[in-house]
Amino acid sequence: MTPQETADAALVPALRIADPEQRIAAYHAATGRKLVNLGIADNVLLYDSLDEHVFGRVRLGEDDIRYLSPPYGTARLREKVAALLRENFSAVIDPHSDVFATAGVSGALESLALALRQGGVLRQGDGVLVPTPCWQGFRWCFEQRPGLRLVPVPTLKRSGGGREHFGLILKDLQRAYCAQRTPPRLLVLTNPGNPLGVNHPAALLEDICAWALEQTDMHVVSDEIYAFSQIEGADPPFTSALSLEVCRRRRDRVHLVWGLGKDFGLSGFRVGFLVSASPQVRSVLAGDERHKSVCWFGPLDSLKGAYLKLLFQVPDEGAEDSGDGAGEWYPRALMRLYRRRLTEARGDVAGALGHADIDYAGRGEPGRNPAQFFLLDLRAHLDRVPVGGPALFPEIDRREAALERWLRDRAGVQLLPGETLSCPRPGYFRMCYTAYRPGTVCGAVAGLRRALDDLPPPPAAG
Image 1 (cartoon, rainbow, N blue to C red):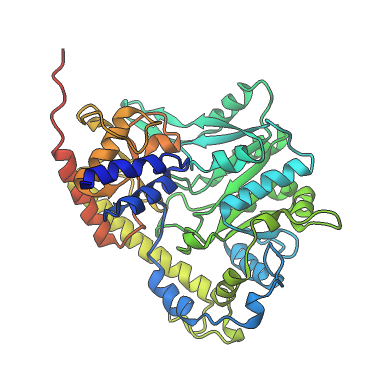
Image 2 (cartoon, rainbow, N blue to C red):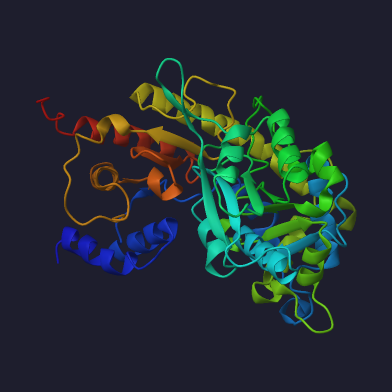
């Protein structure tokens, strides 16, 4: 077969995969073509440090292959994770009752939903308010097995000058809440966001949570998986939901998820943590004399535990110096290194996008936090791309699907179409700038510019 025939044949099995990021990975594996895949949320900026201090030093002992540790992580691991989270999220986190490890943050979200259902807080079909655009995985975390129902909350606005921008306000949530025949029972906030990466201002979070917790009976779920993905001088700075006064007063209805996949660059490890003070959640996740812990169905296995034990080791337990400060705890030093490298990478890629004159959300706002993404605005090119041929994303606007294919074929760059992330307009594409070293990403940006320049002119008016 020709390379194009091979690529077209690979579409058939790939299209059976619901998750767009997994579909991308499966398609690329089947075709064997070397592309710069900026569509999947990966982070390689810390690999060299992790390889030196963790990967290259792990030694498995006999106990690491035994069936010893609880499915939600050992007490020692949860103490270490809670220590890191208390420094940056909230001092009130209790590692012994509030923290549960799971197989990824998606597992934490589903475990939370199942626990609230089993505990009688939620019922089949209850609504879940989710501001959009958002991570596509919320759909499966809350709908597939828990049986809940997502209620998208659009945040696209038009400024006085006619320029569109994304921005969450309290009225967006109130309007969506009141429009439902049955009041929603969960509010999910992603902070920093995906695909926008922005930090929500503390005052906005306080207003939203005060409304949700004091004027409705909703529970608040704060997805803070990108909490440490902060550039230097980010404005506004990151604020955890657990640090808000209203959330401290209503701790039993506030749940936080975080993990190692994004900030620590360990997405393939699938290690997540759920933090909750809800008695119902604690009971279901810990298990009792009749029921297994719900984490048992997606556990933190002992082999991951062996790596995490070394990752979170403190100097007085025999860890070597991190190289970033005499005797400094490695996770703390690693996150400090990450902020510096993330800031540099963001600056390099933003410069490349500016040189290529490729627009993106937040362009011209140097203090705006991007987390690990640029949301490219390619709407001006939608009507120039030839439509037709097999599409990797047939479920979205056909022009957006055609532009994705054009950029993949002509530039050798994979982007994630915005409509897979519930963008309300076609033409937005998420680009993960931490998936490769900055030089590779900047080269990919130049390739995107050449591919856009190769598009045929738009059809003549009339």
